[in-house]
Amino acid sequence: MKRFEGKVVLITGAIGGLGMAQAKVFAEEGASLALNYIDVGTFKEDAAKFIAELEASFGGTHKAYAAEITKEEEVENMMAAIVADFCHLDVLVNNAGVSINASSWKYSAEAWDKVLNVNLTGAFYCAKHALVHMREKKYGRIVNISSVVGVTGARGTVAYGATKAALIGMMKTMAREVCQKGITVNCVAPGYINAGIMSNVPQEYRDNDVIPSIPMGRLGEAKDIAKAVAFLASDDAEYITGEVLRVDGGFAM
Image (cartoon, rainbow, N blue to C red; front, side, top):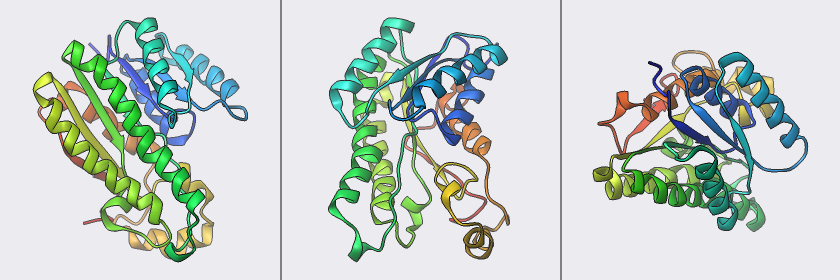
């Protein structure tokens, strides 16, 4: 039996490098997927195409849900729709995130608000409303995508680093609150990954600054994060809660 057969997994910010890699791992292991996206640009079409690819490759039933996770009403409605469609929700992966970089003394209030709203407030709303259903079922797994930046800090990432550190604090509190309800809450802290935000980093900076700082001498791949997320979301990790799993090639040792 596959690890996620019969399980329903919600991934926020699912139409992107990290989210799509996670979706493939979960689908291959038998999960039914609820893929969240924000309805801008071509994301609606991209989500439909990706679901068709997942079903062709791995089978199963998967659905996409447009919701702005910074708006609590939209999150609540999304959770209700998922439970109506699939009858339950077993796993939440708080994957959605943004980064706007600038030195602290130059950082605008608008950028600060946007990063905090998506990375922290949105994750809180999703966890809050997922827990309503998970507590009722007395089973659940929540995995937040934090970052080694939330552990070590990094120049120019004042808002991003603050949110990723805050996700760890939020996770520890929630883990204590629900651990006797059959629910675990953990974080995966990616290092420098060859996907997502790193896609916009100039190659020269990657080669001269980023890669030399990683003991393994290379960037990670999206699948490395996906496998770590799947582990913490599985029953193989049923006695692990309140933990931060770094996947960073030794960067934060």
